Amino acid sequence: AANRDEFYNRKTAAAGFWKDHPEILGGRDLEAGGTWMAMNTNGKIAMVTNYRDLHNLKLVAPSRGHLVSDFLKNDSDVESYLKSIEPVGKEYNGFNLIVGDQEKIGYLSNYKEGIEILSDGIYGLSNGLLDSNWLKVVRGKEKFTMLLHGDVTAAELFGLLRDEERAPDDQLPKTGLDIERERAVSSIFIKSPGYGSRCSTVVFVDHNNHVEFTERIYDLETFDYTTNRFEYKIE
Image 1: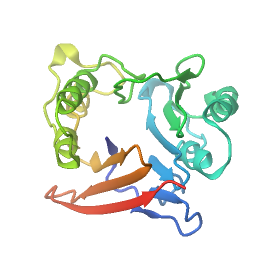
Image 2: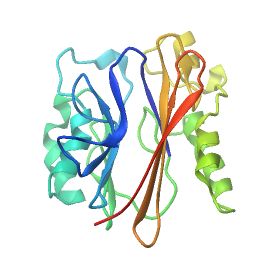
Image 3: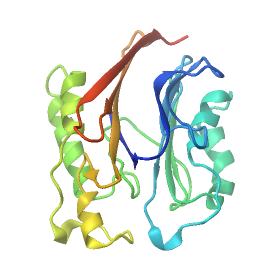
Image 4: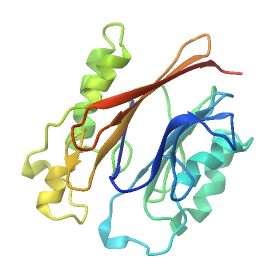
């Protein structure tokens, strides 16, 4: 369950199967050609977030969205792919990359040494490292855990992703933003001038390898939404 936080003026395609790679399902960044989160019909999944460190931004760097799409296009397994990215990770601006298949899920950040294969559990990720103590991450994991006590639904997860509660000033991270911007982006769902949560995605995969992939795209003035929903069986 994930929000995509991005500048409102960045050109984006809604989720769908890609014309040039029909095995890939996800939204698409129309400026660089990559994506923030997608799956393929073989059961591989990948997602990326920026690691927010405004003091160390490269003016010229490869697009982080291709870290997602490249994994879905090739035959590499989780560990092999992450090990191939690790040596060149410093060429990119800060990122958190999660890639997975039917066997395992792995995590890599260019702000942390080594790759990590994730054991069973509940994880939260924003724009710091995986499972950082940012309030939005802690709240998100707590709310997600509560939902798992029942038969969790997509609607409940979308409700979690619309949480607009901001962190108090004494719990804000220091990422290089001024205090007003840091407050504005401290909620799970972000609404701020020119930047915010543009879409939400919920993915279910059951024990029979049946996938339900649902995306909500928000109107950036009213924050009403349209829904795209896809179902398929992993090959």
